[in-house]
Amino acid sequence: PGSVEVRFKRLTHLPGNALQVICALMFTSYFFFWPAGVLTWLALSPWALNLFSWRVLWSFSALYTLQLVAHRPHLSRGWPYQWFLYSPMVDYILCYHDAMCIREGPPLDPEGRYLFAMYPHGVYGVCRAFSGGVGLWKTLFPGITGRWGSFGAAFMLPGIREFSLFAGCLDASKPILQKAVNRGENLKLLPGGIDEMNLTDGKSKETKLVMKDRKGFVKLAIENGLDVVPGFCFGEKYIHKTVKLPAFLRRVLRPLRLSGTMLRGRGPSFLGFLDPPLGFVWGEPVRIDRARAGEEGYLDEVHDQVVKRIQGIFDCHKARFGYDHEETLSIVSVADAKAALAGKPAKVD
Picture (cartoon, rainbow, N blue to C red):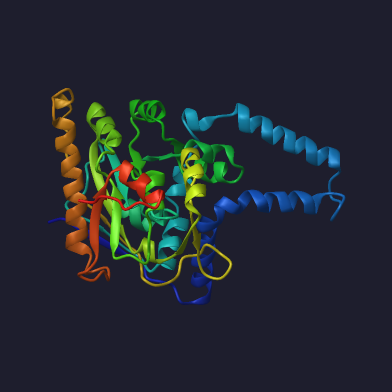
């Protein structure tokens, strides 16, 4: 009762098609903003258009590098973000993917406090588009906002840093997230992280979630009385082709929180393929009793509820989003994910 569906049909008229492609391309290409910036820097130099002297260009580069090191908003309050994350741009991204989003159950209380946990991470994390927009978020969760937790290295990479801060991201370390919670902010996380990203396999009928022993987000929620809202994205593992780097490179990259799985999209871009359409389901929240925070076994109890809620979403909605009966969901541990990274089979539940 009270469930709501929001559909974002792919736009076929020229202006709408152009907007959705541009927005989706921006979202899937921000990791390449820095080389684009380097090329622009060179184009403005005396070697090309000669619009600026070398002194001006190098001075700008020095100042940017200085603020990159000295100005660290991701470790404090971040940047203003609602104008960007909850903008029509996100809706156009969803239109490109012909997406549908479902919120199970009645609307959440805007006065409540929440931790939104999204699964699976996917090789790129396109599912993050289901955390914003006007037609989506403001329809399904009116009066509720939240900041993203992101890996720390993102804030040291030009272009990625600015895009992440505009989207409301903070460093995903517990002390920083705790400060955000203390300020009264809700949180949005992809708890599966880099390990789950490396398990993305669009050729497999099995989707593996790194949940078995990843309980830190649940502990944070219990300590602060944040109800956990679980969500699952259907179709993301199929909209990009994945290419796994050699095992030794993946092992080197993992401690750096970098993926050893590359992706390929339409043409020379990272744009996702148009089939299948994306689907996302936000489940009903797992209610947290903060008074039981110190109780033995309560962490496992809540974690089990989150796992069951995700499994229930998958079982209930997979057929609707084009998954056949052979599609399965497996819960693995971090150790299993690392074993898979090394080419060893992972144990699953």
